[in-house]
Length: 416
Ligand SMILES: Nc1ncnc2c1ncn2[C@@H]1O[C@H](COP(=O)(O)OP(=O)(O)OP(=O)(O)O)[C@@H](O)[C@H]1O
Ligand SMILES: [Mg+2]
Image (cartoon, rainbow, N blue to C red):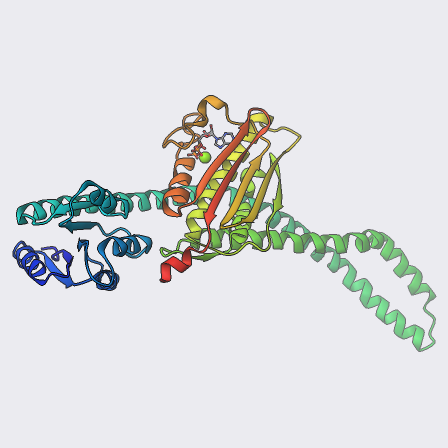
């Protein structure tokens, strides 16, 4: 049997409270009681009830004010608030909805009606929770899918430097094997010379050996091979680190995140997607404040946009084109927002489809190439989950710019 759902009853009139509590307990609910707006907030934060029955007129803080505050706090925002009021004139009812209430019942109330409305709102809440759960699962599935897709590119990215680091190391080993005996002979020659012995014959022989093993070539190539190998290992290390960061940035709670870093990580994990068609230009605002967000989900959005940009460039330039386009990534601190722009010089979006690109499953890609979920997911994550905005500007044949704006300072709401 599932645990009884908790209903918080807040009314300054004790008789009302007792009546409601008794009747709701008899119907199998667990009840909690408070007598003013402040208590409503404290108890909601502490007990997270399934629903709140809130009187409007109460001392110290009225129901409308309490509801506004409950809706402003992420911890309590989703709890349905059902008002009970003896002032049921239209303006008051309108206000009840305006402050975030889900329903309004006139006093004196009929218990049957109160229970019926509670059941409806609990059902709705359950459906919303399920929808959110499905959404979270969808996000995770999309993330896993893109990690899978990226894996092939990442493997290639790691394979290329691994191959030339291997070639270089073999070259260094072979050369060293030739050089080591000659160097041993140089040391003996030096000892003979210091002791005042005759070393002309051995010196000529050594000179011939150095010519044989092409010492000039070795001296020229040795530093290059070492530099290349160091750079190759650096590339492997960067991509492995980025992949690790990208796949692990999935904390379920929101936290302050450095979006410049998320963007850099995403550029690196997606390098195989864009490097043959685009140069990437970064214009990051180094003073960008950290943003309170789900960094993993935002990285996912950025990945979708970079992949889209690369696709649009491939579409315009054609496969195997010798010239490359440009993907420009910009971050800015714009007042109350952190702004990220993903710009490309790709094919552009025709005006007749611009209204539809954020629709779920809308795609212009060939069957099997895309599911059309990238931008609809981006919209959900940015607009619904982070209260941000996404806008797009595009000109066919010239390019496209997506601008994401995320509100700053939301961590303050989360702790208050
Ligand atoms: N940068 C861009 N340039 C041109 N068109 C774009 C760009 N970004 C998105 N679009 C258009 O919007 C459509 C929807 O994009 P969305 O990312 O939602 O899906 P998709 O890329 O087609 O598929 P998926 O992301 O599932 O692989 C694309 O098919 C394309 O027509
Ligand atoms: Mg896409």
